[in-house]
Amino acid sequence: MLRKLAPTSIAAAEIDGLTIHSFLGESRKSSKKKQTRTFRPGDTKLENEWRHVKYLIIDEMSMVGLSLLARLNRIVKTAKHINSEIPFGG
Image 1 (cartoon, helix red, strand yellow):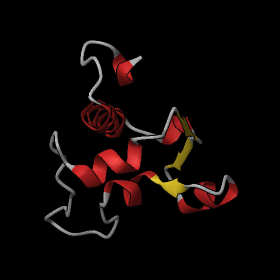
Image 2 (spheres, helix red, strand yellow; image 1 turned 90 degrees about the vertical axis):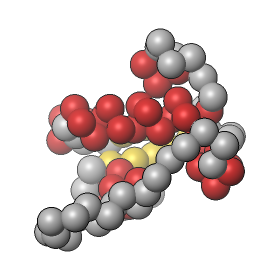
Image 3 (cartoon, one colour; image 1 turned 120 degrees about the vertical axis):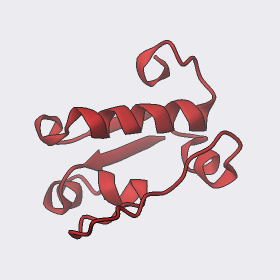
């Protein structure tokens, strides 16, 4: 299965995907406290979302910051129970 993400809603719509922030459960609205989704090993919802995903495509990669990319890396490793030494598990 293929998961398609993009940093903006327009880019996500063009590839029939999700925005990175909506996938992470974060709000883009300006507020002092960020509403973030908690990801832990054994999170069955997270694991079910990634169970059959083999490929991740990120459109408009130049618009993705390092901190967001690092969060995605941690999430994929947690969900797929893969080698934490290799970026995105290989």
